[in-house]
Image (tube, rainbow, N blue to C red; front, side, top):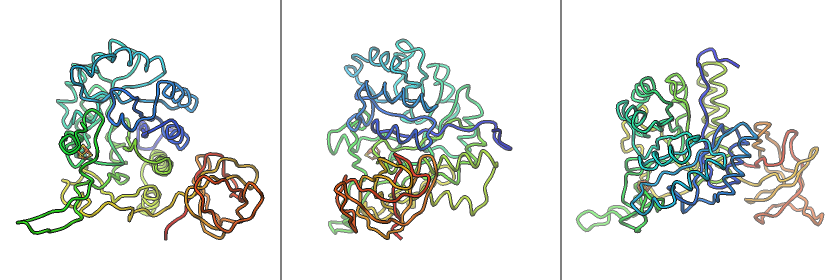
Length: 404
Ligand code: SF4
């Protein structure tokens, strides 16, 4: 389908912390996912991807018309490079579409060892101007530059229109209070190197602040609010940005399903209609926020990043507005089997977030255990309960409930 306004529909690129979340992201509408292997990747401590998982993930993505990008984005020291080329070659053979690299040494090794794989210049390189972007293209023959989260909208437009490669921009997720990972807070406070995959998120810890020996506050954090750029999507599409990235390889399956499906709908509608009215945009924003659990701001696109962009209070889940109640593991006719994640009860108003059928509101009816006992409440995590489900619910769908 063509668009009345945009020449191309951008790729929706989602994070995947493990194979289950990779599949969730693809089923809920991601065109591509990015994952980290157990080597040479930031967040490598959090990664559950073996080479076998990456192979399976690539095959699954390919079967669903999607692709897999792998982060190879550490800032390597001398002995970090051992085994790199063999690893890159194995990733190519596994079916990986692109490497996300932050080091020129890794980019060069990637061209040598895995020439069929695209090279994307990581946001760790903080590209905020067209001259730097062009240099990356010319010197390292990259296919895409991932723009720094600190770019303004004007900078995104200027860079995108003047570089001989694709651009990718962040639209959602965590921001660094320092310059996109150029930070040694974690190194100093925990001896874990943020630029070699070990960030302990020290900025988000709770601190006591003293002034002249007097305790001023005991709930201070330096964490940034999360990026939520729904209102900037149309302008980013007009600018010709090729890929919209959601941050969050540490995020839950529920978060991935909610946020990815919400942006999928927003991008598809904007592409189909060219623009949306305020009421419809608010609906999309509400849908995105059903998965978000932090305060948000719209990033540096139209804002200098003042104090309002920081979470100046203790971290909490005060901003959560929906609870993940369970996952549909079987669906047939008008009933199914749900694996419990949070407490719920017969009579609760809830909804199925379906990867195929959209949002399906309904009232929870009888809950029946494997022994045929009828319960009023679901209280035990991972217990499987049979219940009536709305038409269109399918295996893999998510059951959730509003907190209001
Ligand atoms: S400690 Fe915070 S600011 Fe520093 S790299 Fe980690 S997340 Fe970013």
